[in-house]
Structures are given as structure tokens and as C-alpha cells.
Length: 155
Image (tube, rainbow, N blue to C red; front, side, top):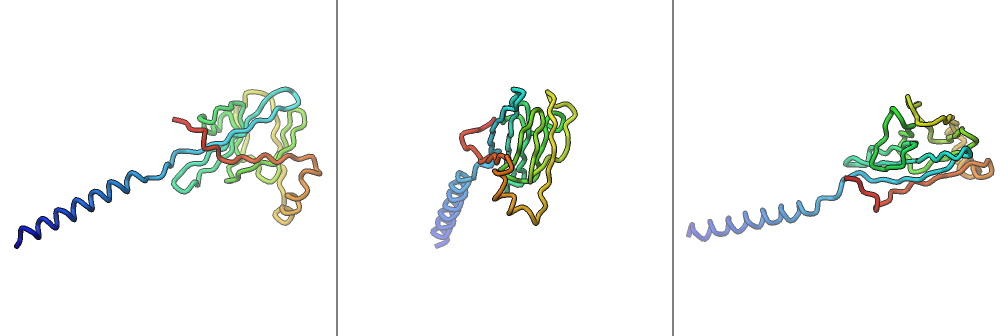
């Protein structure tokens, strides 16, 4: 009688192991996700807005303003401006070699951006944000959406 009991436990153990292994095959892909867009300044220079989202909950959500369009090169505080506020869009106005940022702004200036550019932050008061979102186009401001592109993968 004890033998059938042992067989039942072995079957149960194998079933549990099988289910655990099967479940481990369904682990979600938690590799970083990216988006890249570029604009050309009136001086002919091209700058890139590179968004990178990573982390278990996607808590690292950064937009780098960079002279390098490679999405696999993460934000570098030495060479890139950073919008570190977890946003998927940028409101900007380019005038000459000056880039005016509205609403979401940069957190600092890199030590050595590869070419001359001035980035000016224009805060939008919290009480004015809804009005701004409705009227930004009339002010000559461009909204650049940076949705995640599932085709962009880095190793």
C-alpha cells in the first residue's frame, strides 16, 4: 500500500516541476525599449531625441537630447542633455542654434556637447498646463511624440 502512495507523490512532484518549467518559459521580456526622433536645426545640424525605458516597472524613462542618433548608446551626462521626468513627448521651438524646451525640461547641461547649441528651459506653470496643451501650436511650438518602437532592439 505504501508503494502506490510513493508513486502518487512522484507523479505530483513531476507535475509541479513541469508546471514550474513551463511557467519559466513565459517570463516577460524586460529588455530596454527605445524611441528615436531627430530634428534639423536652421544651422543644418541634426539633433536626436532618444527615449529609453527600462526596469521591472519601466521606472527608468529618460529622453536624451544628443548629437548621436544610436539608441543603443544610453544617456551620457558628459555629452547629452537629459529630460529625466518620465514623459513620452517633448514640446520644443528651434530658433537658430537655440532649442527652447517647454513643459518637460532638461535637468542640466552636459560638459561637452559635440557642437554649439543652447538649450533653454521654459517652465509651464501647473495651473497653465491644460491651456498650454491646447494652444502650443499657435505659439509656434512643436510637439514631438516619442512612442516606444518595438522594432528597435539593442544587445
